[in-house]
Image 1 (cartoon, rainbow, N blue to C red):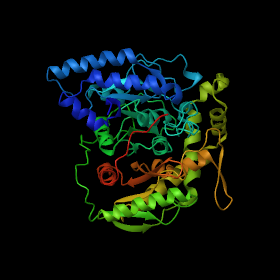
Image 2: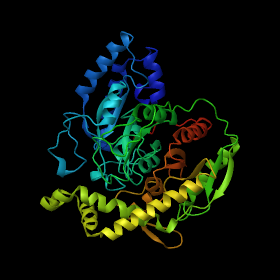
Image 3: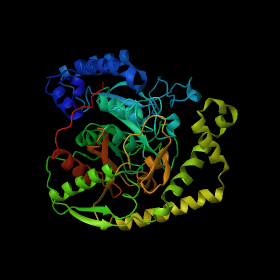
Image 4: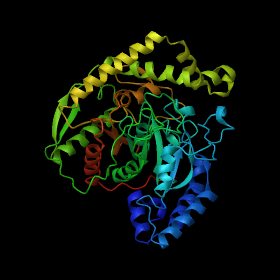
Length: 463
């Protein structure tokens, strides 16, 4: 096995025990980037020289017994919405072509302090306003979408071009590409991870979180990221916590909610079968399955778009009026639509969200986690605009991909996607676990138990 194939946890163990040096690990990942990047397009910027310099410093620290923790010397990618001092933050847009970050974002600073080594900035759907990331190809099948908006981060992790990466999630933008590329993605509770220095799409829905190869990897990154930052008005003031899930796989006594409504409506049969098998496996591990009804389902997508679109339009108001031609057509249309929404529509979406949060709080008192598909279908072909369901219903690809992930953004609850098999064409399927606010440890425990008792997954093969 090559160093780039290691999970974060395995790489950290190898570095800590001096079986692998940070320089060897970073060089392996940079060589992998050079090999696969022409076919995948995961990166906006590759910072090879800087990464090697930091890796050499990490190696010197390790030799002196100065070990920063589990991320010491581990290569990472950051979505190109996340500021790193002196580097471009382009948001994969011509609007930001000349932008240079004056300082580190909170998350970049925390990961650097924890010893992680930045190898590059990964592509996003322009300003995170989309679910496909057209610049990037799926790690499993280059003719299919990567998912978005954190497509570059997911593809980098899935292909070995980063040991872990950060993404952002406003309507599913961590979980969707993670599921479509067969890796793990975690959207934490709203406010748990600070967003200072991260380009916003919709301030009341934005989250930052890890994309990794294993659930334990995600827990290690979350432990480094979580914590209060007064510069983010939504940041929660909480004590530090170790989110590692432990080694146990016994889920006896855990109540797993299985939706009767919404989450299995208009879902590809192969996705439904794989997810229901995964849920049955949780039962085999001791969990008790409880059928649940998802509240206010008819309002979910209207509320998501009713919040996101006007907030995005407000953020881009000045540039949209002075240089609209710099935006891609798909993003410009959405921003212009946001300018046409009334204050009344926005306030109605706010009220709907408040009601939805209250209903979900009641629901999550009856179960410990909810298990459902992450996305209703696997990766569609690049350029495909719609999905047609068996009853003849036609849905846009963006609506299809956001439909099952949006509830966690509206309500702010944590959500984790874990690989749960593949369809007949070898395309990954994701199991989504949703929990109570600040219930990350339970989610990670369940996801880890499922993952540890499944057949070993190999790193995505890139032809």
